[in-house]
Image 1 (tube, helix red, strand yellow):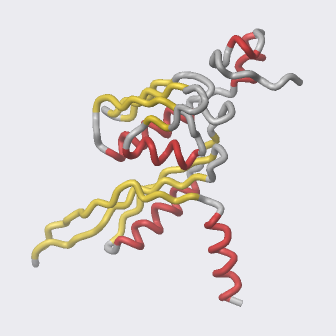
Image 2: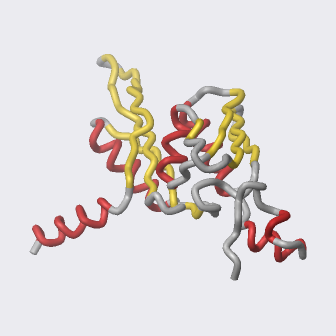
Image 3: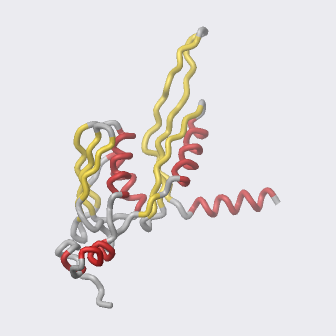
Length: 179
């Protein structure tokens, strides 16, 4: 029975893409010397607009990664998307890290580095332009990216709220399906 449950867990996990962004060794000085531990920053996404970030800390690397994955799964956000890009520009800050995210026309690809790329790919965004300013601390860059993605608004709701046609709130190359 336990075997079957473990198999089911593995199958459930496979629907999510897990990316380890960074693993850092930490040291605590004690009377007898130093105690080493590890911190893992993990991004988990389904590739369909849901993504989460987790930080796991433990004395062993696999345990830190496992804790990070669990935390990321508990903190999923939904990212509104237009086809394979984001609906509008956004600028977000987390501590000293500043992320600028811009929609890109089809075929552009993911123009992002390091932690931001991991978050964007896990969310399933395929065309985007990004610029990281300020801090290059990978955890703060990842959190700034997540914050930016969470600030995105659904273009259909935004058009309805403003009382304008959808074409006025989407990038010029996006052709909405007629309904």
